[in-house]
Length: 80
Image (cartoon, rainbow, N blue to C red; front, side, top):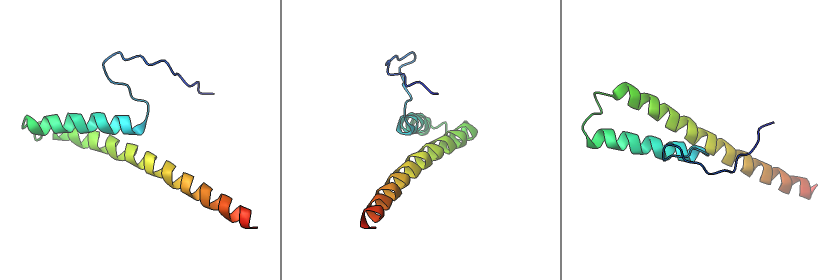
């Protein structure tokens, strides 16, 4: 069983609790690399970060789709 830790403790200034938190951090890092014209120098790292960003987005979208399906199933069950 996974215990829900509600203690807000920031050790490095960033707390990752949800996929949107990861997406925000990745966006910040990639934006900084482009601002500093280092995108080619660290392109492999950027590609890996973007893969993580995409996976976090997928997790959020799947959860949203599951909620919508469950709501539709409840409505259909109520009709029967």
